[in-house]
Length: 147
Ligand code: RB5
Image 1 (cartoon, rainbow, N blue to C red):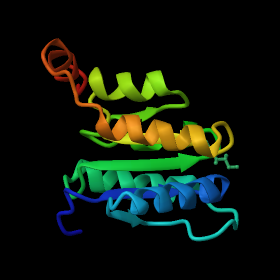
Image 2: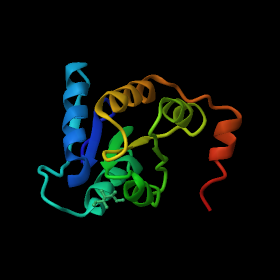
Image 3: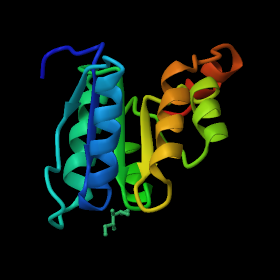
């Protein structure tokens, strides 16, 4: 995959398909480039397929930031965090979105389509995108994660 540092790669399963479409439109309205890798319908599918695609793109540095959505956000979190260099954070509230960036340098935002409403999800995305990593002692802690 080519280098897309300024684009956001996004994927979901069927359970969060509707929320994903809302988030894609929302980002495009803000002139943020989004690459949607599926799923493309409400037909039941396996979240692992899309979680792996997005996490692989982040792990290989083809993209800097990604968004993953499933029903609970849990399956996507489990899948994405198996990839080296991926720091996927499930954020169902504004505070987690902010701290996930400041302290954890989150590079994948995970949203739960069956937990958060559209308006809250949009605010979570906004905060997550605009909040910078604090670095310093938090970088030192991140450096100790990989075994
Ligand atoms: C799909 O039914 C659901 O299991 C999936 O979206 C996700 O919540 C898994 O963790």
